[in-house]
Image 1 (cartoon, rainbow, N blue to C red):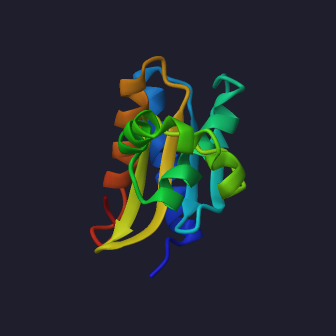
Image 2: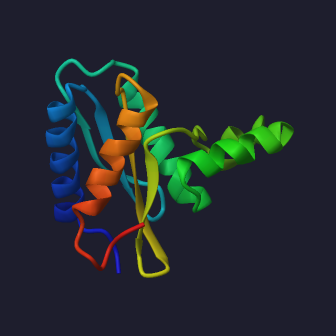
Length: 140
């Protein structure tokens, strides 16, 4: 019950196609259920930092089992805890727009994050398009 590499690649392709239609240049990161990177695609012209932000957001979402917006609220509610979370987790913990869990039924099988859109709404829209492109058995 895991996210296959072929599924992850297909999702990334769909996200990049949609971003191009919007005129956005983004980076897409897809991780497995443990937060380990499966796919990282940076479109030509995407902001350089987006290639570091997208994987951090995706792994954070997968590790916390929370979408990016909920993770941001947690960070705001418990700033002293999250000030040390990078050390505890052993990886940067980043919440934000465009990061979503990927589930099969009730099981988290991965996460997607999009970074670099001209507006946070574009990152969200692209991530949602990617999730919608998965087979019905895998969704948010």
